[in-house]
Image 1 (spheres, rainbow, N blue to C red):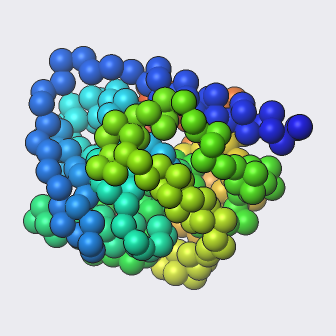
Image 2: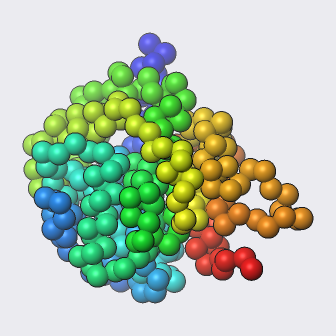
Length: 292
């Protein structure tokens, strides 16, 4: 019963995020298209102009609704390329495991298709893990990374977060905004149970990006977390230390190029509601020049 209440609370918060996440305010019509990459026809939108930044959503999310306000703010000074990854939104699922490696390679294929040599990447949850894996697999294509609530190993999640997936089923989405929005957008609207099971298989699959590989990445990373977002504090500190942080007195030592922010009273889901706090932090990070 306790687990069921936890799941229900998470779902309710997720639905509120999707339903109340904001509307468009005078946004110009974006350039849209489908990129043929790795067997996918991956939907993307391009908003604004300037230095390119890739926007990667979380599981069960899409561009519309979830990212509207984020895109509006970021596109004031940048070219925002928002994508819908395998099985999400307007991008049909395919007979291929959903893994961080595959998703990262898809993003690399999109950049090649758009003839963009390199870009900054902002990713949330599933998208955050994809962005972190991207820095390992495609270092030449990334300048800076913002990872919002994502670990580099499965054991980076707290036990409760892991247990939720054990008891999660697609029937819990029946009649919800998540299911209806997916069916409205996706080319295969009757395949939601298959898509859900695809995501669940990924969530339950062990993964480890490798501390040595992660430490060797060159791109600065901004780790953004909530203080109750489901990622263990010890793991957050480990990731930041691997990127040169955690043991620095910034008044008397050079500061690392990577950064860390932990927002108070903020969950994994409600991080999406902290746009007005997070986007200025992102802009400051992406605009920062290397220290001499």
